[in-house]
Length: 128
Length: 107
Image: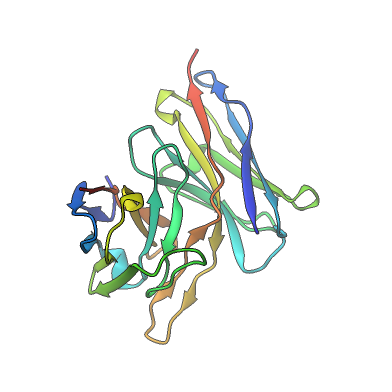
């Protein structure tokens, strides 16, 4: 069974860089059927997608965060990573990694894609 | 603000049926997905695509779609179904968007 687990510093100072790694077990990150995504959820609020990355390192990012986000993949370690630059208190949140299924198209012409295998989450606080 | 709209809170009597809705233009071109999130836990996918349940999800969970609205129905709600429910889909650029979430209370 595929499992994902976030790791990294839980306390980051304002203006510095948030760095998290997601370790994938029970399956290979080198699949051409999936991207690997990062999401976040401020306490008591809704979910926000940060971006996703393909096993070859090709990313796609939420336009609202694109200028501060970098994602990468380490196939040898079956891991993918998130860097978020110039953080502020507004970046304090639970950060999740998840598997991001590539879009398929139904016979009716509708797109189908979903996020599954979410990690348990990492609570990151931005504070001096 | 969320690109998908959900009612903030819904309640249902134990054993009764409840429908939670999600509305947005992205649902015109993509099926919506539904995630259940209990306090202190990560979201869990309960419905994906047209009306598909991952392994282990009870068959009391189902979904339907009409125009720009996706609906999650729980038939015979149980106490353990009390949770936040989030819908999502891709937008026309392929990016992920979410609704604000619906808090379901089972009375």
